Image (cartoon, rainbow, N blue to C red):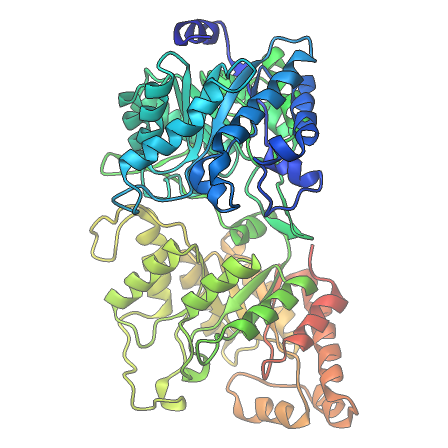
Amino acid sequence: MNREAFKQRLAEGPLLLDGAMGTLLHGRGIPIDECFDALNVSQPAIVADVHRDYIAAGADILETNSFGANRFKLAEHGLEEQVRAINSAAVTVARRAIAGSFRSVLLAGSVGPLGVHVAPLGRVSMAEAVEAFAEQIAALVDPDDVEGVDLIVVETLSDLSEVEAAVRAARRVAPDVPLVAQISFTRDDVTVLGDTPADVARRLAELDVDVAGVNCSSGPSQVLRLIQEMREAAPELRLSAMPNAGWPEHIQGGRVLYPATPAYFGDYAAAFLRAGVSLIGGCCGTHAAHIAAMRAALDHPEQHEQKIPLQQTRRQRGGVTLPADQPTQLARYLQEGRFVATVEMRPPKGIATERMIAGATMLKEAGANFLDVADSPLARMRMSAWAAAQLIQRKVGLETILHFPTRGRNLLRIQGDLLAAYALDVRNLFVVMGDPTHIGDYPEAMDNYDIVPTGLIQLIKQRLNTGVEQSGASIDRATNFVVGAALNLEAADPDRQIGLLRKKVRNGADFVLTQPVFNPGTARAFVERCHAELGDEMVPVIVGIQPLYNARNTEFLHNEVPGITISDAHRERMHAATEPQHEGVRIAQEILEEMRPFVQGVYLIPQFGRYDLVADVLDMVKVAP
């Protein structure tokens, strides 16, 4: 099929592509670190099975199993000399699957990123990148022994320079073969290099491509929004959409799970159709059932009419469209009323992070769905909290809540640190004053601050989250922080606490974390009062629970820590306990059970680094949803 015939076919209506290849191969038992492209040669039957499933599901276009079959990616497996053999085999396997189906199905050659950076960001020159793409594309359009592909799909690229190299290669090798170029975006609606959908659309409109669009990314909702923005920026473009099955949230037994259902994809297929998309399919996490649902929706779009609105909310400032970042998992939990189970962790005193990561992993397995990362608790020198938070998120896969004290930071440092944290995907904050330096390792250290916690909440929610800094000057894009505030449920002056809470909420606080509760009756009554006085303004309460460690620790907390009062009954139990740590866990469980109907989460605070004790609370109370 030449380019003109392909355009005429698209004018008749959208075409349905297939879904994921790697997801299904992994699901069939292929290790995630194996070269999936080499299976075209070593295990062609398993690849053919995937193709046949997609044909049976109703796909109009299959993609070859060649996403990573370029010289750079294959070199990771010592296969760089087999570019032609692997790509040629990919075409052969797919063509045989199509021949056995008795359906008219087009074949697209899948061309993914090179896996290296093109100059000036990397050491691979534009000419070298063009040669690598040309080598792969030549094998796809002119393979050994079988007819070549009907079109080329360049996909999941994020560097527009690399896209240009791929287009140059395709037009040199196969000037009349239809070419689709698809870009992948981060959850912030920009590419990893910071290009917006409008930037991408305008650049692709300048290149010699037949269809431009979005694949992978975070899911159908985001891809629909991106496609609409690309349409506005370059109305002449034919568009494609191949989203992931949502944002991967869980890793179980080494497998990545995607949440979006086939029915959900069916609704979005109809929405893509209404948005004027020409090529529709699926990417990571999608399988034959998703494609079958999309087939049904495209054949009968009236059954999905208006289920997904095309108008997406976008924030604007100064006439420039700013993409709306995806909500964090914590934001979704708070909005959906799900129970939050978070545990405070302290960064290491040095640079060794293994113990912290091991503790975080254990807490995740015990049922924690978030982890709080403290910043210099008790004014003791430790690793930067936002660096520790980013390490936990990357290595453990749990979102963190970063403690962000105002003490010891001026406005320049505060805003710089916040932007750095946001860029590292640390986007849940707990704003506090922080411990005074005179109690810590460096009592002579500067202890000044430019802003109090209520003011910092306002700065974050009403300034940074709207795209400006404190001075009013515009930043390059708005943040989307979720911000928590402190609350004492057993304060000696509850009227003052109510007043502070009202101010924090009106400045934008999304939730509150409380100091440890040891008298649940008092705490419950105060929570009820907060709801009564703040009404609809009241935000979710995540109650602090701190397991007592032994009798001495109990007396220290009761007598020497301001704001903490431990009942006589609990103190007597700790003194009488033969296994005090276990007794402390039992008391913590009892307090949590009594508080749970009145709060939306628990914030467990371990003592002496005993994460195992709070894990016992999580495990035995089963707070995880």
